[in-house]
Image (cartoon, rainbow, N blue to C red):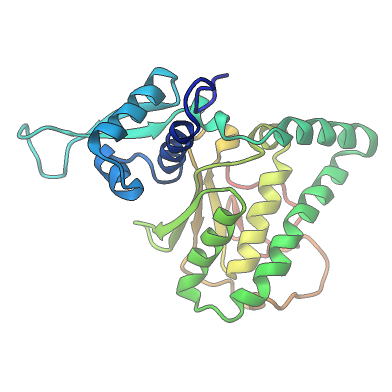
Length: 259
């Protein structure tokens, strides 16, 4: 696997090229002009880095014709990260995590893997539940996206055309492990529902071959749900509102997450 930089290039050149690749990962597909503006680079410098990343197979070009344009003008050229490019950003502990989870499943069973996955998101819940209790409902998805980005998931939030919000994670440090052990994604989805206080549904995941992990956040709050930061007691196994939609996160034993 090639890295996003070459060992024979000067350090500053490698660093800038890595920044270009990361911006494409986090904000792509994106134009060369937008990259230059964000990084303060000249068009020639941006093109040099893009050409190198294209040769290495880290990115790929896409053309999009602006809405309403019929045959006139040049289609916009966008650059998107490839699977190889995304893999270059994956952390080495992904393989280690997979090995550890296989060992855990063999020795203690699948339920132990589920418990481990939920323990991994517990710190996120502990940090964000008090924060979410003070954040307006219409800002919670954005706050969650910022928190996920700080942990390396390159997340973004936007309004969904069908209503509600859409949470996207453009990078997953444990994608390979999650492909083998979906409990990791399930626990994360449950945590999102608890933090946001509304049903959520996973529409796509990097672990299953999609380009982005996409989660739809319902505009309707869970009836009778406890506000973020206030945990409700009771046995696990709370009902789900629809296929893949978690109605009471981390209080359910269902393994369906909408993928």
